[in-house]
Every structure is written in C-alpha cells, then in structure tokens.
Length: 610
Image (cartoon, rainbow, N blue to C red; front, side):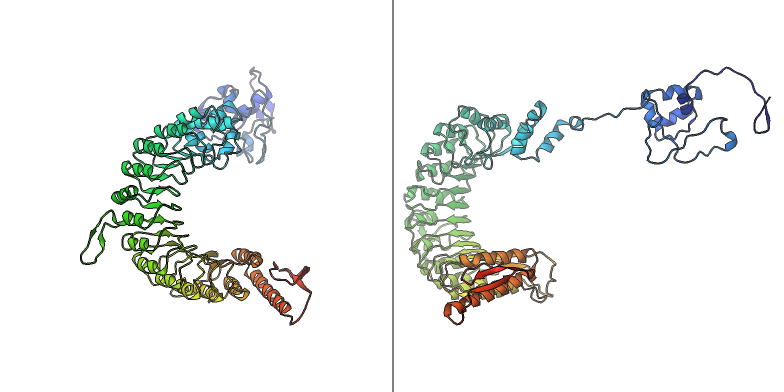
C-alpha cells in the first residue's frame, strides 16, 4: 500500500522496459492530426508510438499544444509535467539531433519543365540572353534555344555583340527564325568565313531585311533561293543587287507581298517589271531612285496588275507625265464618248509617293483625277512644276485623303489650300506638309484649321503665315473637341498633344502669337479646360522656353506654367522697349517658381526663362 494524496493506493511492481526521457516525452504528449497520415498514428497502439516517432519522416508532423492541456488534474500521470509552448516558438526545440528533420534546399529552377524555362527566358532581351548563357552549360543550351530567336533583330546590338556570338545565334536558331532583320547588322559578318554557313541556316524566313548590308551577290542569292515562303523582303541600298536578283526573286518567292529595292543602283525598272509579273500577291513596292521608269513596259505592267496598294517611286527622275498617264489609264485607252475621258478601272492605290520627281506637271495630276478613289497618302514634295490648276482638279476626287505632302512646291498658293479645305477629305485630313510654299498665307491656313477637325500635324515653316493662324489654332483646339452637353471636369483625364504646329522661319510670327498658344495650353478655367494641347516649334531663341512650358503643363503644374508665361511676356516687352530706346535697363532680376532669387540676366532677345 502506498499513500498518494492521503489515499491508500494498491501497487503492483512490474518491470518496465527502460526508455529514454525523450521517448517517454513523445509517447505521452498529445498529438493534433493535420493530415490523413497523422490520423493513422492515433489509431495505432501506444506500444508502437515510440517506433513511429523514431522514423525520420514523422517528426515534422507532430505539433505541440498551444494552450494548457484539457486533461483533468486527477488523470495526469504522477511525477510528469506536460510541456507548454507558445505561439511562434521553434517546433524543433527539444527534439534530439537524430530525430530533427534537416531543411532541404529544393532546386526550383531545375524542377520546372523545359518549356516553362524557355517561356521565362523569352522575356529577356538579346543582350541579357547572351549574358545568361555564361552561367552554366545547361543555361547555355537554354539561352541559345531556337524558340527564343524566332524574331532575330540585330539592329540594336549589331556593333556590340562579338562576331562569333552573332554567327552562333544565327546558326543555332536558323531553322526557328521567321523574321530576320540584319539592317546594318552585317558589319561583322561581311568578311567572315562563317557567312555561308549562316546564310544556309535560315531556311524558313517569312520576312528578311538586309538593308544597308554589304553582302556579295552570291550571298544575297543564297538567302533568297533557300526561303521560298518569303512574304516581305527589304534589300534597299544593296549595290550588288541587280536585275539578276530580281529574276531570282520572281522565281523563288511566289508568295512575296512587300518588296523594297530603293537605292539599288545595280537594277532598273526592267527587273522590277519581272517581279510584278510573277509575284501575284505583291501589294507593296518601294523602288525609289530606280531608273528607266519612263519606258512603257514597267508602267503598263503596273496598270495591268492593279494590285499595288503602296507604291513609292520617290526621286525617280525618269518618271514624267506620260509614265503617270500609262500607269493610271494604260496604253491607248478607250475614250468614253459622253465624258470624253479614258475608260479605265480605278486604281487600288492607298499610298503613293512621287516626291522629287521634277519632271511632273499638272498633266500628271489630271491623269490621276478620278482614278485613285482610295488614296489616303499622297507625297508630291519637291515637284516644283505643279500649280494650283492641277490640285483644284485632283483634290475634289480624293475623299479618303489623310496625309498630303506639298513641301517645296513653290508655285502653289492659297487656292490649293482652299480646295483641300472645301473638298470631301477635309474631315479626315490629319497631316499637311506645306513647308517652303512661300506663296501660302493666312487665308488658306486659317481655312484648313477651321474645316479640318482631325488635323494633327501642320508644318508651315518658311511661309507667309502670321499670328492670326496661331490664334485660330488655339481657338479651334479649344472648341472642336468639346462635349455636346457639359464641359469636362479638370483633372478627369491627363493632357495630351492634339495638334503640332511648325512655324519657324516665318517672318510674320511674333512673340504675342506664341504667347497665345502658351496661354491656351495652361488655361485651367473649368468652362474652357481641355486636355488637348498644342505643341509648337518656333524660333530657336524662343523654343527652349516653349518646351519648358509644355513640360510643366504635361505634368499638371499649370500654375507654374502660367508664371513662366507671364515672366516671359514681361521679358519680351522689356526687350522691345530696350530695343526701341524707350527705356534702358541693363539687368533684370529673375525669380524661379518658388519666388527664390536665381540671378540676373541681360535683357536680350531669345533669353530662356525657366
């Protein structure tokens, strides 16, 4: 008999197996099962608990109680104190080293599938891929995987990457490359012995740009002949490309849609004619500075095909009125007895560039009248023989015109601008270039600004325009995009440039007109607030102040912009007074936006105030 808590308790002495203190601790502690595997441990007899916990994988599944045990005090074993833990303590405290589980550092990158690794690396640029290839052999093979180089554009890094790396990239990724751009990127490859292997590796190209390269003719032919699925080819500026190259293109690339052979001095219009005849899908042709277009054969081929939508023949001095007539109406066209005009299907041209074709006259414009209804962009800059007569006949028939270039057409006057503003394309016009048209003035420009609400770019430098045009532009931009019901709330949308004006070297433009533009941009009155701004390019002496004013308006600091505009106006008035001798002040104190003194500057024209 043994007295325990003043009570007699019978005892029977049995020899228990010897166990360590830690084993007894884990055998008695309460377990919180958190998974199906732990629930199986509770169903096993106590005799096997010690063996279960001795296993290495089961220690991490034991969780100690975070509060005091719910076992009644009378049922607690004598001489045994249950361990209490607090939240946040280490779960392995008190666990022997033989049982404690060691952390395993998992290779997260190695566990990813190869497709996922390649997809992650696809977000890197060419420079980063080359640098990552030096990490290990595995990374080297991943970084040079062909799937990462389907679009190979060497324009940005052609002069920074070693020739062996560039050739390795092209050879490794050759079968995967679809879009190859070696524009100016052949500097290292032009004299390298690996060039033939590089050219032979690319056999599935869809687009290829070799502009400015110095490849030999055999290399160019090698690339063209091994890529029959080419849809876009740019070999502009290749002196080694000739009419033989054109014949090879016509035979090897039947799916060609876009071709650029501008400034290829080794070919003429006869080679271009062969390509137009054989490549039925050709929609875009750029052949600037190509000779022998005055012959009837090439222009008659363009007339018969009638599939070209983009045609650039700039600086082709051989083009004259007869060539344009053949391209628009054909050779010996049938004449309609009622209208006395040649019968010809309308052309599908959308973009036509005839700039610097100095032999064109108004007769060429009359040949185009009514034959290009889908024309959206027309470039006639440098055609000095064109007059108002040809444009007044052509412009009323262009209902989709958005871009018009009349630079250096010195014979044009306001009559051309009035015909454009009153024509069917006034609502769609976005870009107008009439620089160096010295006979154009306020009347035509004001009408263009009023009648063309979609105008985004107006270049009128070296013309006779005055401050009236700037004031009309400020008024038009303020009202043309106003909402129908209520004015917009200031700050509802960020400001953006809605109209770009170029007025430098215009002798009638003065600083009050420029100030009208600045005041309109910084106007924050709720009834007149507009997020659309006017970007102005004026005299060099004023341009820095105008640019600084625009920066402040774009970042939303209109108060600072207004202060800059007022100080600039004061400075200009002081400069005028000083010039006229009304009063003389040798120095003017300047203050920045925080009303802090920044120094003194001499009052002179062109001073930048910021």
